[in-house]
Image (cartoon, rainbow, N blue to C red; front, side, top):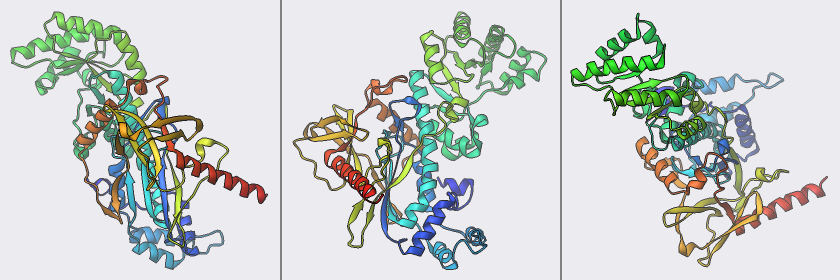
Length: 495
């Protein structure tokens, strides 16, 4: 799926923050532009006070990188930019450099649908400083939002306990991008269908929808409206019953159901969009069952999220299908994931990688240095811990200690000989060439479901989840601390 080409244009290289371009120019002018570097994209805290996140957005990243180039129109725009003294912002030779620039980086990333955790890299970019820098903003833009929405969808689906969740959020989404990306991510997170027809076309997501209150109001009576709808869609009979009186609406739907049965058709469902959803769903279920429509589903919508669904479940609400819109596609209770993109290593003139660390007064903002990977350990099919380690680091069979990046007192010993292992960062691009076989969206969705199934339910709790162990391999922990102490000593000596 060529997302950018189908939806926008052949490239989106100006989808970046201006300072990425000014840094690229400064790298070029200082002669550092072609120096190799490694950057990592990661987040520092699970969203929604939850215990996990679901990686999403990689397909967009792949599409962006494959089409990365500066068009003549892009270069014309950059050429017109001026500095404060009205001199050109960028030298003609730099614009010529951009004209010929093509994506040649190595990218490794966790696959979409993977359960991921704070501090561990989701995407690792290795390439020239200029290219790595120019990729920062678009990669964050593409990964941040979809990971956030896929995680929200997964939480909502966990609350629904296996009942289908339909994503109905397009009209409340943050623009076209927000609507399409949210529909895709929500499907990855477990939603069964979307109301977004364009998402259905672009991504192959099943589409779903019935009718609105305006349909009912356009007729003289609710029963007349139901009759006309049944005539138009005899095999698509889900009726919105709360325009006037919800229980009277259920009665009218039952009347239509009887007419449909005479024609060999079935009443598929009734939808309740307001009021006391627990009470009305229970009443509707009883009325439908008494009338012989035991297989007719009760749909519910109306500003739902995982907490409301959990509450309704605890009240034994007789709801078979959940329609969730605004609070899903806008990630209502947390509008951003907050993923970051940090330099972790740079290649010196001798061809060796020098680890880099950003020092901060907040331990959670001290990045992890070096060229590192993530390894997940399993025991009897269940994930038990993730280890962040330096690539090339020999892991002793006798065991390894992992140390929490934010709290060195939190440690866990892993015995590799007794665990199954998986490297989470997979090769995506090598020297700009795609080496990853793209899965279908359905396969990504299935992966997310399987991944969640490999984690203990305590990590999936909506409130106060158990913290899953993610730690630095002991040698990486010591390297990080040594670099931090060295940087602080240098700072103190030069005050």
